Every structure is written in C-alpha cells, then in structure tokens.
Length: 385
Image 1 (spheres, rainbow, N blue to C red):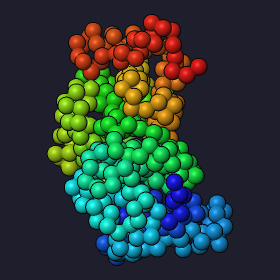
Image 2: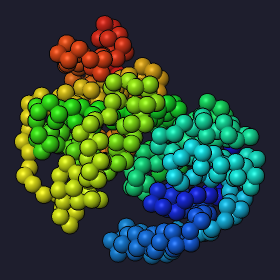
Image 3: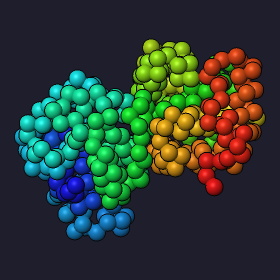
Image 4: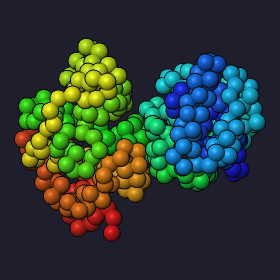
C-alpha cells in the first residue's frame, strides 16, 4: 500500500483542524474542507497563533512553521479531495450524515484511496456498509486536542482489508502517534474501559460514602491529573452523559454502563460544567471554586478495581491486546499507569477479592469479576511478564 502523502480532512472544527496540523507536521500535503468559509478562516487564524507561540518559545524554527502552514490548503468543495491518498472525516457524530459523505467521496477519489472516520462512538462496520468498496474504510479515532494527545485508536471495520489495518498502524506511528488496534465494538478501548472512572465515582457519591471533593482528591493521590468530577466538568456533562448512554444502549442495557440520574439532573439543569461555569463545581473566570478535598480510605481502590476489571474484560472479549489497552489509557486519557500492569502489581487475587467483596455487598452484576481474572488467578498468570 502506498504512503499517505496527500491527505484530505473534512471538517474544520477543533478536531479536524488538529488532524490537519498533525498530517502537515508529518510532511503531508493536506486539503482541509469545510462548507463554511468562516470556519476555515478561524482554523487558519488559530493555527497561525499556535505556531507563533511555538516559534516564540523556540520549539520550532520560523521557516519550518511557515512550511507546515503552507502545506494545508483550505477549500469549501469536496471535489478538491480527488487527488488524496486518504480522506478522514471529522464531522458531526451522526451515522447517516457520515455515510452520505463517504458515498459522495467514493465518486471523487481514486479506487485505492482510503476513507477514514474519526468517530468516537459509531460503528465503523455500519459506516463501511454504505460504501461500494467497504474494504477501504477504517476508523482512526484521535483524541482532543489531537496535536497534543499521542493516542490514535485504529479500528478496522468487519469488512476492512487486513493490510489496511497494518498500514494504518504504521502510518500513525510515522505521524508521531502511539496507535492502538481496537475491535469495532461499542466505545472501542478508551470510551469503554474508562466508564467506571465516572460511573463508580458517581455511585460512591450517590451512596454518601464520600464527597465530590474527597473522591477527586483520592484519585489525584493515585497519580491521576484530575479527579472524575473535575474531568466530567471539563468534558461537559452533556457530552459525557451522552457517551455513557450510547455505550449502555450498545451493550443492551448492561448494568456496568448504566448512566447516572445525578448526571442526568445536571444536564437537565444545563449545569454542564466549565462551559456553563457550573457543574459538580462552580467556576469563576474558568477557575474552580470551593475547598480542596481529603483522601478517603477505600475510595480510589474501589474505582481502580472497577477500571482494572473493565480492562481485563476487554482483553477477555478480544477488544484489544493488554499492551494496546495500557497504551490507550495512558496516551489517550493520561492515566498514571497502564491498568493491566497496575493490576499485576496489585496482584490478581487481591483485585478479585475487592470485586468479590463489592458483589457480595450489593448483589449486582456490575461487580462481576471478569472470567479472565479468575483463570489467571488459578493459573498464577499475569498480564505482563
């Protein structure tokens, strides 16, 4: 397969502009398409400011800055993408709209051009189904902000040619990213494995075991940059609640992914977090208000146990390899350690004991131990040697 030297990006929002920047910095010629000339102009101006700061800080030479920016051509017509080796869409998260876009692109690009989607939650297989050549469709899920976050989840559709998945992994590495191969299942790696970070924290809050501040402090004490409530406020409760609801529905109502009534109430009140100056915390000028919390015994261990169990279950169901899961959680959401390597250091049996204790107390399926962990404990195995 040929290298992706000429790259098309559809959508000049934050994500699309970020992907265009990455490709240009990797030496590709980029065509960035958006129906809005204003969006394209904003993209140009923001990138110019970013590179001006990088030059000012001495992180990039002035001539290199100019060269990278000149590699990006901004246009309003899809037809301009005809010469591209690959095109990635970063538009609204709607399967019908993305399918229509890909069907249009198929009539414009060459037969061997790759069509990639940046979807974070939709089925890549379902998107490929609408194409006449589904074998050239693949998921490339970048994380926001794309130029700074190292992870790219590479998601082959059921129909994707095997060589394309291998080629995409190599291309993402050549772009300076840390790619992780994921099966086309709900949430892929990160949005599946990370659910307990939010859901178990919400459960602990709703039970009255610890406060928002104390739960966040307990997780920061474990090396996380932000606690779950700080992070939900940053992401936005409308976005976080929607992702949880999507994953829950995709897993046929599995109780492990059940959305929280507490978060639904925040969405109903339009207390969406930082962007509304109120969520679990209040904000003034973007600065969080209120007291700092204290570490509470057992809180972090409970959340971590659920995260490790979810990661183990992703291995059990062959969503991804242990190495790719740990890469994804560290490079995609800045976890201080890979969850499965962390489980090894805890001890597999110790992890099982925590989960069994929760299951015995609550009698709920959400605390069911992954069969893989049971097998590993019996055989004395770990995820990594």
